[in-house]
Amino acid sequence: MHKTILVAITDLFFYTKVKDALRQTDFQIEKARAQQDILDKAASVSPRLIILNMNDLTLDAFDALEQLKGDPRLNAIPILAFANHEEVDTWNRAKVLGVTKIVSRNEFSARTKGLVEELVTGPVASS
Image (cartoon, rainbow, N blue to C red; front, side):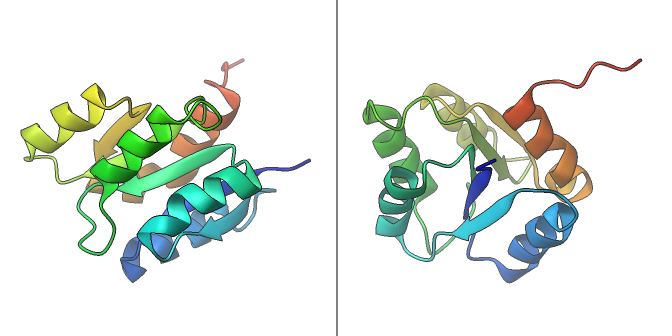
């Protein structure tokens, strides 16, 4: 089954975190290395989830959010974002632009796999 995650993270530490967290899963990672990659790859690979680093200095996550949510072909793709927890404006703006879930950088690092699974398959019911 096609389970591609589009990762728009240029920070090597966080990108490695995602790769390591999803290594033992059936998710495939597609990396967006440039701003235009985010939209192009979202349209071409139809990811189950897009991960954005709101603090990325290379990629403009806000611009990506606006374009993704403004495109009827792409606006239903869930978006998991992370940002510095003290950046209240970043969190609020991401929510206004339609991010599905935003978490702190620490929570993202600690719970990457769980967050991805929650947004792709929905909350797992505990038995």
